[in-house]
Length: 159
Image (cartoon, rainbow, N blue to C red):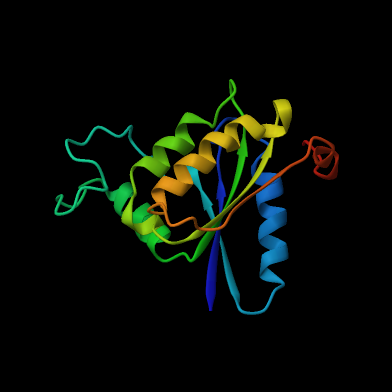
């Protein structure tokens, strides 16, 4: 069975990203052969990356933070990802970029797709994330797709 993780890319109070993320998750759960999971960054409060060796360094010691271990396990057990992310100040949310930076080999050779929103439909933030995803996937050219639609926002009520 293929495991697809939908990543909620914002932790802000009143965030919008969990609405389309849950909608995507519901549709994935209807498909056969897919185990769909929601990975909410609120459930993985990652510290800012401050380690002496980067995650890509062969032979580096395992990280000691429990939340990093949990998230690394969740990423490692996924076959692909759908990132649902806003755009903040022409870029991806810092909390999402930081969460990606903590992990390296677990991203290798896995597909990534992006659903974005906000100014310019989130395209500039996803542009940065696409480059990060290509590098994190070990430069293998894993499938990277983007869907950005400003008119899609009306499909999800802001409560």
